[in-house]
Image (tube, rainbow, N blue to C red; front, side, top):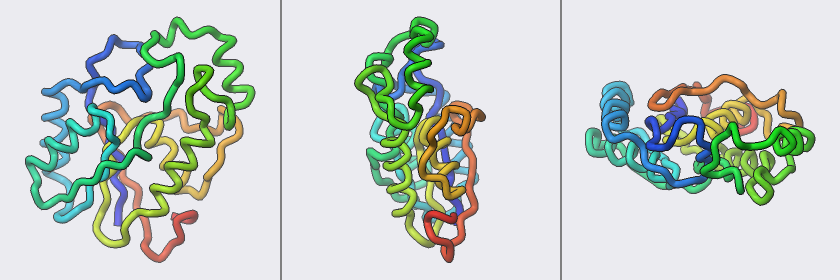
Length: 190
């Protein structure tokens, strides 16, 4: 079985804006193009799980409209990290000292003063990963941070203590990656 890690389409936000848990819409045409591309490659009967944020739900609904054989479930654990008071701000306006405070305690510092910690994000992604159904492929329609966390969990890494341990590569908006998973493996070793 495969886990398809799909990132939502390009959002309707000013470029360079921090929009983790901010519920911004995605570009309708980009969403349609992504749904068309996915619909042509996904196996029959796959399970679709989506973040509840509208940029992901838009893609999930467009995909289900094209592929009624797929099932859809909304899962809040697939929502992007909450960046606290950084939400809606240009990344360039977030002070170096704020970034330094986060990276000094990368696992447990509430981002943006009152946002989520990396440990909390990793825990909810690991929980969702552990509950993946055995059988047909599963598609997660989600966000860049959740895709990075899922890639770590798939390698058996459930905690990240330093910023340099966080994956640097990203899936572009409207694109995806697949992880080959064995149903015989434990969730930790997938």
